[in-house]
Image (tube, rainbow over all chains, first blue to last red; front, side, top):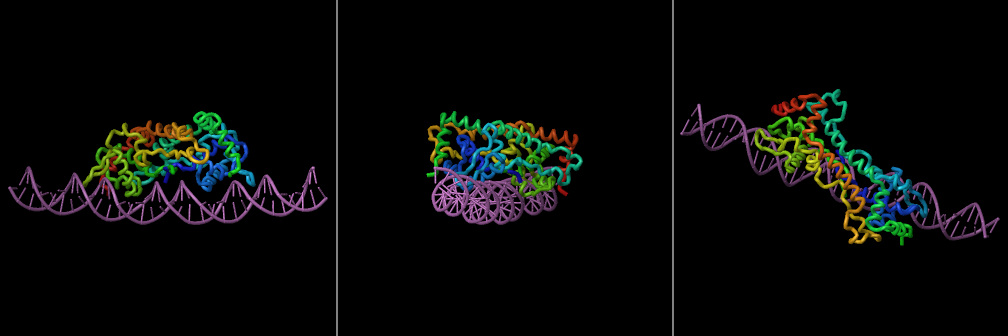
Length: 163
Length: 163
DNA sequence: GCGCGGGTACTCGGATACTTCATGTCCGAGTCAAATGGG
DNA sequence: CCCATTTGACTCGGACATGAAGTATCCGAGTACCCGCGC
């Protein structure tokens, strides 16, 4: 009834957003898939989700592909997660308090039940943590981890025709 | 590959824990299911999970059932969620950075990748929020919402034989 | 009246089908770039 | 030499199979209660 696992596509989408930081020109989905050695068609699905959410924009034609629509500082991890997994919260209240022989009357159900509020609080904390991190932050961390220029190298590889 | 939805059984399990606050004697799973008007057999599955986790203990025989093993102040919402949905985090890193033509060398992968860290931070925030709320807090909120004695009424109903 | 034994009915527990959703794949519509031919 | 046209190939986009996991269910093992019997 409610979601329990997080889509694996989120990881792919985030990695793609980070590497797209290093290029301005569009990159085909197939090339991104080759870079990560993952299923091209399935990655395409995730990129389409990002496109629908307005995080990346697609250009068709011979030298088309995907590119970020905004500077990476303005794209939060939460944006990506919501785009891929959907914005609906993992926990949805079934209002079982209004069922059964001891059901609480409808007039008393003006506010969400305590359990729903607890889960909402936790979900909110998670979302806030995700919102606090931008794709630019991730890129910065990557450079910090693997040395300055690591992303530039990836970008250069992305620009070269797939051969 | 990773979890995306949260098990619906979590809501049931939490409601059961809250109502079990109002009784000391064991309550059969079937009675709890009747109270909430939910599938008895499936609820039994969730209660078994709680039992395995040590949150509730089962007593068999004619007037058996389930009861809390500790005072509700010592049972956190996180305990229940972990028991039902499993303790594994929603996001698990696939280490795709170590794959493909631009794979980062294994020696550079001493720490989790930036994306994995970001998700871990968010997951940690969520877990912390869930850990901060105890079943006793939920019970208190319920009394505050529906009036003092609401839980006592449920407890009385639970004690009466199912007829 | 008291203690004991057997029967009974109720409980949980794990093993078993079914449905939904995430995963993975495919082919068609649209578009841009380049090549080509003419002016 | 420059430009319009045609061709071509490459791109995305949504619709279609597959598999795993959550959902829901059933039947068997175990145990406490209750009744009856004997002392």
